[in-house]
Picture 1 (tube, one colour):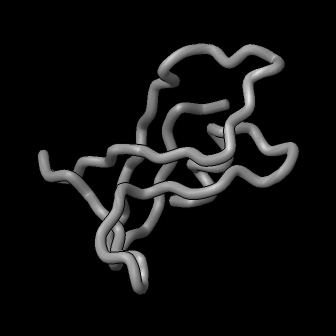
Picture 2 (cartoon, rainbow, N blue to C red):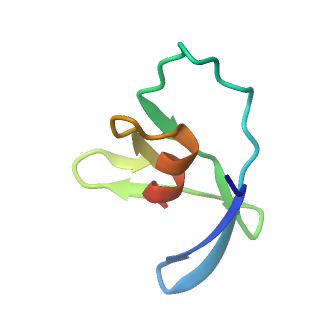
Length: 74
């Protein structure tokens, strides 16, 4: 899995780069992923309807690798 991807947020192309915290063991269960994203040295937050601002992320689909889920959420 690549550790960099490009997404378009609010009409701007943004480069996302990540480093896994630690390797996962086969029996580890991950239900959601979240990432701290920065743009021009400022923290990027997303506005979730009815919940206010939050760190980007969300639930991992069944059979999906956590890294792919974070990429999909972007």
